[in-house]
Length: 117
Image (cartoon, rainbow, N blue to C red; front, side, top):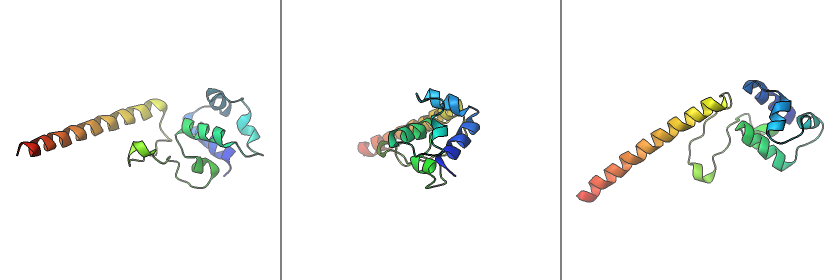
């Protein structure tokens, strides 16, 4: 599968055209079609990966796992949310953030109890 094919598949899953995806990223409408016969520049490929919430390795066909690697400050949790809409993704991220905050409160409470002893 080519870079173009991956981007086409991701656009289709989101229900948007390649032209719309390209213009939302600040590219020309036909940029992705140019990638059928040429390789994208790294900075543009990175922008596409961020837009679709996938890894550049996935776009390049180096892996079939679309999940981007977590950044060093994002911890260990990796989720494949490529099939979710932006609204659904935000909902999942909020739920995860709520769970994280609850876990931190639990840890803080336990530490407070240990310090009393």
